[in-house]
Amino acid sequence: MIRSTALSLIVVAASLAHVQAADPIVGNWLTPKGQTAAIAPCGGGRFCVTLKTGTYAGKQIGALTSTGVGYEGTVTDPANDKTYNGKATIVGSTLSMKGCVLGGLICRTQKWKRN
Image (tube, rainbow, N blue to C red; front, side):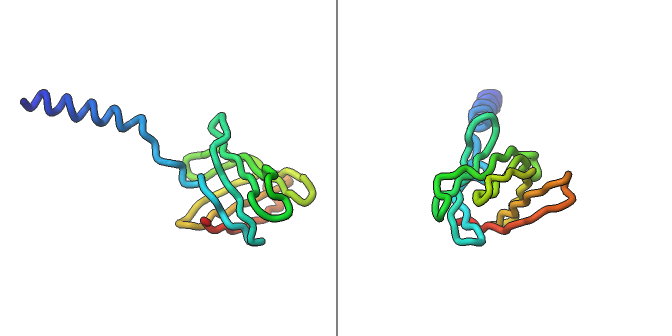
């Protein structure tokens, strides 16, 4: 009896290992300019950032991959199409999106709120 119960628990645990919760970065975020940006998986372990509202609606402005403690990749300023090294971290319902140039010497950070 104990052996079959233990076996059942192992089977259930193994099947649950394949069920993954949505990544915390996935969803809709409100930018400081009041635009909505959607972040969704886009292949190769990346998460693409696409503006959904505002002047640049439909434009992809970033691609990030998880580092385990945050996210790294690229972010693009939609006004001038310049792409920067990007990093993102999430604390609660706030996403800190950072873009840097010159190896991180000059950076700008925006705080986005979960929408």
